[in-house]
Length: 116
Image (cartoon, rainbow, N blue to C red; front, top):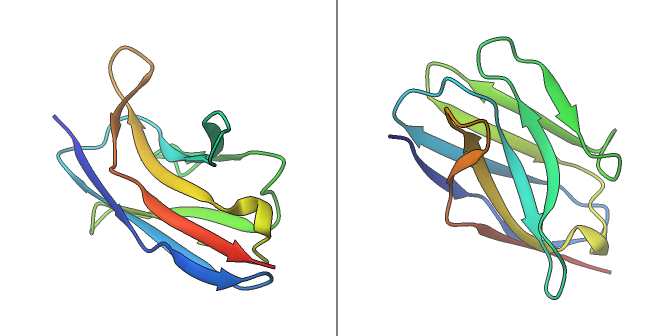
């Protein structure tokens, strides 16, 4: 069983930066990533990383601005967000895949608000 606690959101001006953290309890054996959901919109994939190999995948909307990483010793994943835009405003959730191949474990979410 994996439990995820995400944090690090806040209010920032456009062009600013934030770093989100996702602390995991339990062994991470599958890809883990970030999703976001803005009010009135569907949940959107942001980025993911394969825990052991470190291979990363990004949504086109964040490529070149966001960086996903993990610290194996701390069992924590990060999302470094630079050059933030108002359209990045959303609740961000970390999530881990499970044995079924889908994202089974979710963090509670952290609010990111970017003002123009």
